Length: 138
Length: 263
Image 1 (cartoon, rainbow over the protein chains, first blue to last red):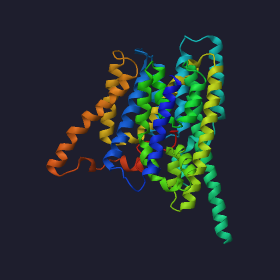
Image 2 (cartoon, rainbow over the protein chains, first blue to last red):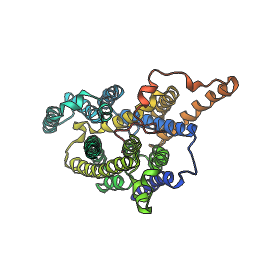
Image 3 (cartoon, chains in turn green, purple):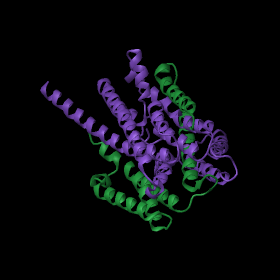
Image 4 (cartoon, chains in turn orange, red):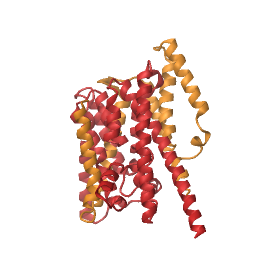
């Protein structure tokens, strides 16, 4: 990905951001258009999630990754906090691969150490309540 | 007077605590972004430059995801841009907060995110709105960029990122971002149709295109629903959904995506 692509994406993003403050009072976004934006974003996100979970290049990616993503998806649907969703995706995938045979002994040891530390150090209250519930308290 | 001063202090502390929690959550996502991008073979400066200049997590993940799958830069930019269209209504919603001098407007626009807008919309008092927006926006900008840089360091230090399952964090983040919008039945149908089409087309089309082709599912599903509306005068969208109200409760105005993770 060339630097130019980053700059173009940044410019487009900034244009969307600055347009609101510049046009305020002069324009309102119709509800239908807002719904379309939201739906388009959701369609794109799900399609990207599905293809990047299931495929590498033009081929099937193997079962470990889709399984980790599915576990994370179930947690997200049950409104688990975001960091937990991310960590579970990686942990389930890593554990399934750990159970597999492709990895060298040394890498396996590193990964096992990393994940056991993460589980032990993970603040207990992260797992208790969804993020949104805590935020709305004030 | 004194009581007022105390309540202001307490709510300042509450704001700082809430902002810190959001920064922590997004920091974890940022670390995984930086690590995965570098582990996928991108140069170290790319995720860092992207985080500084684009500063929108969902579209950063999307663009890098397309690139890592072998897609063209044009497809990556298109995917990222579509995700960021929601920043336009966000900007309208918080226009009063950044108003003032021209440079606060320019700077403020750059820290318009799901989270900073959600924080601003929690308050009605202009001063509190401004404090919430700027605190969250600036803290998040710093936290996100530091986290991505740490992720880049971690990603280049790891010998075998597959063992850590980092490649699964990309699709998991994207899915978690999309979930709140999927409470709507029509969006869910469009998303499932589009995703199936994208996966089916992946072996056939050049990388990056299947994902954009998924947007076609949106158009196909949108039209047939409109006609019965006008004919019978009934609106399909008004059917009560058991899940809809519960999920939309915490969202910023008009936003389809979750507040709480997308940077």
